[in-house]
Image (tube, rainbow, N blue to C red; front, side):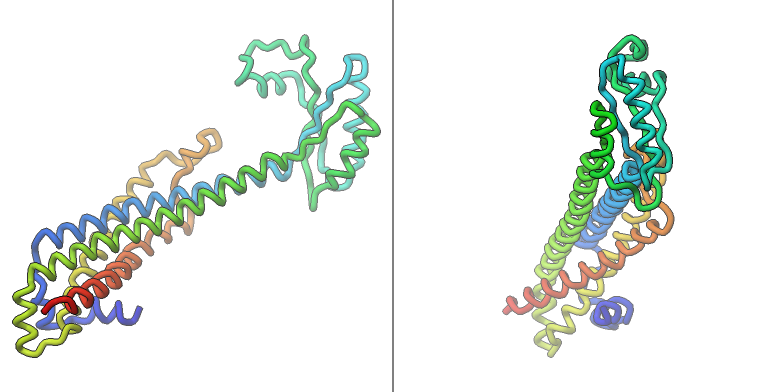
Length: 298
């Protein structure tokens, strides 16, 4: 990092004039860095938004459970009362509430429409359970419910939480992989641009060598010029990406995942790391390419 700061911010005098200030390599480097930084902002936003969504859904599901009661019509009321009685006496249960017919209709509406006659159908009775503290012993509660209400089934949402956590982990990994691919693509494009600039200045490099210039002196100019271009392009791309993320709809409870694709709070600091990281990638790629290419010159 010290070498990067010295190479970029310490003027190198005559060495800066080795690299032409204009040309397609300059435009290619700036465009590549800007485009990759723009994509990097969205990769970060996707990864962070996925983590927030999974944590919110996981937390909500972790604090709620459901008891489903399927029994003959003559036993439904008695078993429902037994379930509520067992739940109210269970440590770790804050409240237990039987869902009304209109609530059951709302749950079934996406599949059967708004006119479903719940009261006339053999729909199971549902009891919503809200946990408190460390929660309850699910296995022990299942055994008590089986004894008091044989038609009841406890669903503690474990089967829903596990896929959410797995999906969040994989999407975070995908976001990190995307950032790694963006960095590798940036390094590859800047390497090609540096090699093209070195090839275009082959005669000048030969002349400098004749007068005693070392390869490190020549490479320093390329490293400084391309690193500055990469930082400038990445800054433009990061600003454009940040504005694009700001233009997305704000997160709300009804909007779900797509409206929450953005940064919140201190997460807005993460995109600020993209320009210096782009500069570091450009520094390493250009230095490696310059020294290797210069060693190949005769």
